[in-house]
Image (cartoon, rainbow, N blue to C red; front, side):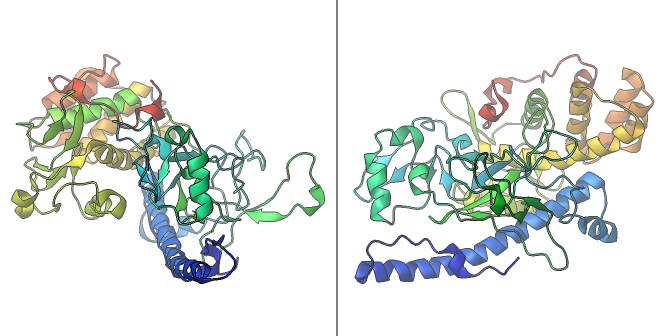
Amino acid sequence: MSENTFSNYLEGEYDGKTGVEYGGQLIVDMAKASMIMHQVEMKQTEAEENEKKRISAQYEVTGEELDKLYNTYVGEDKLGEYLVDGAVLRCNQATPADFELPNGEKVILEKAAGKGGDECCYITLNVSENPMSGNDLMYGTVKDTVLNENIIPPECNCKLGVNRNAEMEKIMADSDRNKHGVCRHLIRLNEEWDNMIIEGRSYMTKTDVKPLGSDQKNAERVEGITMTSVLFCKHGGLITPVSSGQKTFEAPVSGISKKGLRALMALEILDEVGKQYLVINDDNILIGIKPHLAGDSRVTVGFGDCLLEGDLEFYLDESRRNRIAGYLSDQVKDYDAMKDTVIPVDICFEKLLLDVEPLCQSVFKQFPKTGIILSQEQFDAIVIAKYQCFALGDKAFKAIKNGEDRKNLYKAFLDAHGENGDFHSRTNVEMNIYFGDGYEVEGELTDVIVEPMEEMYGK
């Protein structure tokens, strides 16, 4: 695989062949392309670090063991990270927000009006060739960039404005632009995905199968794509994977059920004193959460996210920081300066899913090797307990393994929560879920919780 150059990221299609307008667009395009080249490298480095964290949590390895395992990351398909048909993608420039045209008009998405969600921004990778062994999944490759075949433009708007006359003409000619958004008129995909260059290792290759009826003689071996691959849109966006498509859990990303996630959210916002940190609108819907102190010498935000080293980077990411009203810090001494900061609930929910995923992976790894087959209720209760106390604990693990009754399991779960605080109510909820007696959490605020990604779960 050759090194990337800024020419790979030129938008092209300048207005006119020569002249001032052409020259001006070319200069701007060259500067933007050089910047995007570095953004791609940064995105891939960030994705690689996230994948290492995922692998470390899933296989419970660190240090040299992690390095050794990661050496199989690219060349072999042992870690389930190659993208397949159904992988979920997201462009960093996709948005449900209004799109302003050069003439002052706006494209206002009908489906996003009043909701504030960004479900419309997600893309599903469509691949119909290169079958994996042992299942019905199909591998994606660097060649799977065909617009309206591999990549269906999402029905959303773009953070980047119109910069070509042809783009403006297409949008203005679309009488359904408020229904479908402007992405489909701006998106122009690179010919191939960018795979991260990793010294000493090569990507798995697959034969690029042509559509039925086409010339098969020119079929070629091409690289697969992974969670660190990036697809460049020539309008300026970077399309990256959200999930590989290889996991088929009930809920996106985590594996915990919708009811389990809702119970966890309710536990985290109902078990605190005061509730002044919850921002609820006139329709009695939770729309934001302020930082609060839970008495554990840490700042807590969102749904029980105790800010540890590295957590703050998530909230201060450029795509989220401009939506957070106020100052943020992970230091208790700064609490007075940030106690009125509002974090939108969809960002809090996104972080919840991110934090729950490695806990789910740990349960998937920990219990099957003991021969234990967990029900959905048991799985949910264990993940909820892990989220609230960081680790399930040896006593709880042994109690589950030995099939202990409710009384003994209650003691083991309560012990895992530790000495600081009264966790009896939380443990009772966990026991009710574990033994199939329901997911209800006591408290008058339960009904204000609305999952910001509800459409991804289904009704």
